[in-house]
Amino acid sequence: MTVSPLPFRVADVRAETADTVSLTVTPAGPHRLGPFSPGQFAMVYAFGVGDIPVSVSRIQGRDLVHTVRAVGAVSGALCGMRPGQQIGLRGPFGTGWGLAHAAGRDVLVVAGGIGLAPLRPLILDVLDAPASYGRLSLLIGTRGPDELLYADQVRAWAADERALRCAVTVDRPTASWTGDVGVVTSLLGRAEFDPERTTAFVCGPEVMIRATARDLLHQGVPAPHIKVSLERNMRCATGHCGHCQLGGVLLCRDGPVVDWSVAEPLLHVREL
Image 1 (cartoon, rainbow, N blue to C red):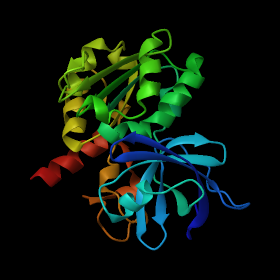
Image 2 (cartoon, rainbow, N blue to C red):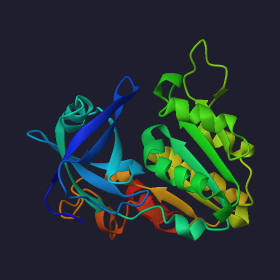
Image 3 (cartoon, rainbow, N blue to C red):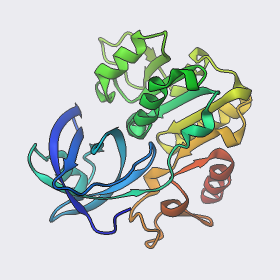
C-alpha cells in the first residue's frame, strides 16, 4: 500500500453511460501499485481538485481500470480526463471479495447500478477458472437500459449460457426495451444455485443490498456466505475521518467487503 499518490497516465477513456466512464490507467514510471484483489479500492486523485475512493473494475497486469460516475467535483474532473493526462493513485485499500472462500461452491453475483463495477473483476476471475467453482449466475439491476455498465460485455455474457446465467432488469424501461422490468431480486428465480453450497456477492444501493440479503437468507443461503460491499460509505481510506464508521467497524480498515452476519446488525443500528 502506498501512502503518497503515484502518477498514472490515462491510457484509455471509455464512455459507459451519459455520466459514467471507465479509465484505463498505467504507471507513469517504473513504480507500481498492488497487487490489487477484486473488491479493493484505490484513492484516485484529480490533481488540483481532490481525491475519492474508487474500486478497481478490472485488473490488467500493471494497468488498472476504474469506473467513475460524475456526481461531484472530483468525480466530474476524472470523468473529463483524456488519454495522455495524469492522475494520482494510492492503495490498495480495503478488503477484497475473498473469492478463494467460494472455491467448489456455486457463485451468485447480484449487482445494482454502478455496483457492477467492483464485481466485474470477480466475475472475470470466475470465468477464467470455471473448474474451480460451481455454477455462476449474474443478476443485474439498473434504472434504465441506457444506464447499464459494460453493455457489450453483459450482452456477451448473456449469450454464453454454457459459462454462466446472466439476466438484466430495469426500473424504467424505454419503448425499445424488451427485457425484464422490476427490482433485481425478481430475477433470483432465474439463477441456478444450491443455497447451502452458494456464496453470494452483492453490491449496489443499500436498499437493494438489504432486500437481496433478506431474500437469499429466506432461500437458505447462510449469512456468512453472503458477501456485501458497503463502499458507498468510504471517504478517506485511512479510517481517520470517521465517515465510514458503522458501530465499532471502520470500513476503511475492516471493509468495505463484509459478510452479511457482520453487515446486518451495523445497518440495523444505523436505522434506529
